[in-house]
Image (cartoon, rainbow, N blue to C red; front, top):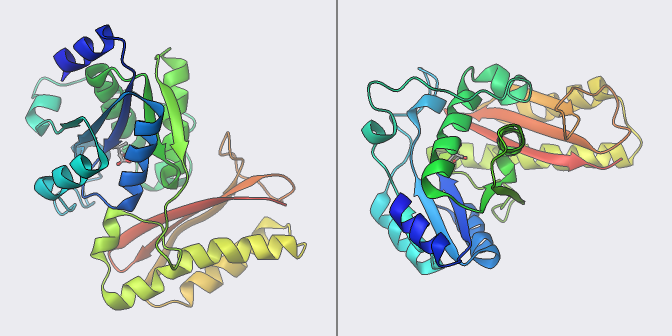
Length: 272
Ligand code: PAF
């Protein structure tokens, strides 16, 4: 991988990179297409990164299908699919980690200890191996996008980070490889995440700005759907992720909801 990147860069080409954990859907393909628009060559990595999963999380069962992914990536015109084995990324002697301290604390960081340390570490490793000039990340993982941007700034990396809007199913459900965990009945319930985001925006338009009031209403709405369990419903500053008490300026509304065994996340920037 390194030799290819070195050669391509020497020839003057700009490398766009899309790091993924595979099991592609339209959301991944949109990131690849965006990278193709912005760069001369596109590298996509598939690596289910063990160090970003908690001990009780779905590392072992995370969906994988390399052959199908390879076909899909080829159809989009990806130049290189990079899928390193775990033992090569983390040999037994491995002992160095990257931590973006503050942005990793709230939201998913609070619920999934060590998750963003695992994400930042693997993304830095992948950046060092692939040497891209730009990398595209989906905004469904909004906190991840902020963490990576901060890491790039703090460690003076020469990679431009591009955020790509959330890609949704027709009924609004944000695309995710974890949607495959949903039974047909759970899939119906899962629509409530996007509907909750829309409800919040509607209530704000109606003049409701108080976050505890909005939160209570959204939680009630979500829990009225079968199979749901709320992990968090948070209103935060879209840059620092500090909690806000009133929606008086652009505010990130971030949700994490279990629907059956699938932990789904979604978010929007609310406009008062
Ligand atoms: O968003 C993901 O799929 C992963 O967190 C990433 C960025 C590929 C790192 O493992």
